[in-house]
Length: 208
Image (tube, rainbow, N blue to C red; front, top):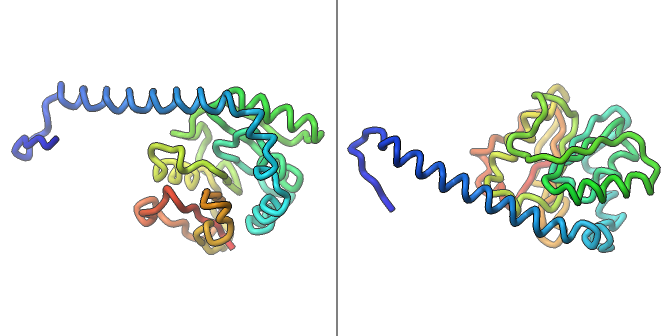
């Protein structure tokens, strides 16, 4: 539908109706995510394909994570990636919208006797952290679930620190994972802006 208001601002009632539609869409999407992933929390974490050491080791290697890193795992699910990074990082925070996924992540953490993890139930828009809170921001199997992947990308860049030199590459060149995106950002260099990433729903960026 196209509405022409002669270059003038649309009526307040029209703007209100559009925002209500957007809110309904977001609420419906989040409800579907919660329903789906509440049921999948345990089965997802038990599928061998999601915890293959070769993929996790490749993420660790290419991200360059080390003992000084403070890491954020966005939409962390059952914490498989977060726990892998916790074995090398100073501290890892995992955030996910689904309480059942966070509960499962805590179980896996306990099984692996890891003490340097924090879990949070929450949305990723916006991320509930100050600017430059983490030296490394990661995510896996997620961007195809976001209604606004560019906005999520911008949030990931916002909470990542700057200062080290680095180059930025499409993560899909490193981690195709059956076409599903894995992403990581480290401080330093000049990260691409959301506007410069027209295929952000398919690609992430990795410093190498």
